[in-house]
Amino acid sequence: QLHVVESGGGLVQPGGSLRLSCAASGFTLNYYVMGWFRQAPGKTREGVSEIRSSDGTTYYADSVKGRFTISRDNAENTVYLQMNSLKPEDTGVYYCAAGNFYGLGFREDQYKYWGQGTQVTVSS
Image (cartoon, rainbow, N blue to C red; front, side, top):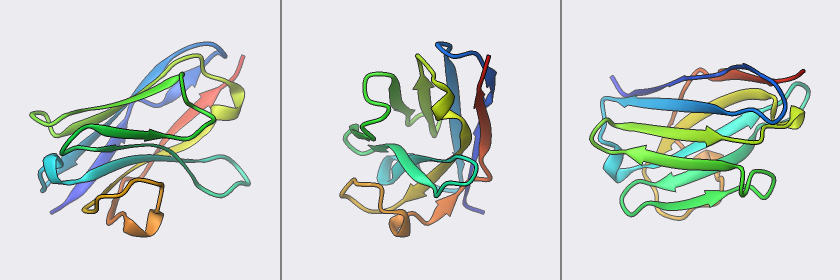
């Protein structure tokens, strides 16, 4: 069965760091775009970062550029999101998703597999 599972969320103080992991099962990461999305309470889900596993091309939302880094380990079939300098507005449920397409740009309809999400709370 094909699926992705997120881990690594938690409570962190403003300015702190977290690393999220997304483990893929049932398919090979190399041929997929992997994305991180988030949904804050009362808001619609938004794209955070994407990586095209075949060539490592990345894409970030303006709100996280310079603070978040997406990476992948094709051998481990896992994608990571390193989040530094966290702000309260980064709070939300973070979802990992996988899709077999090429162009990046947070097109949710292109993603086929979604995880259950992991909660990130940035608060003092």
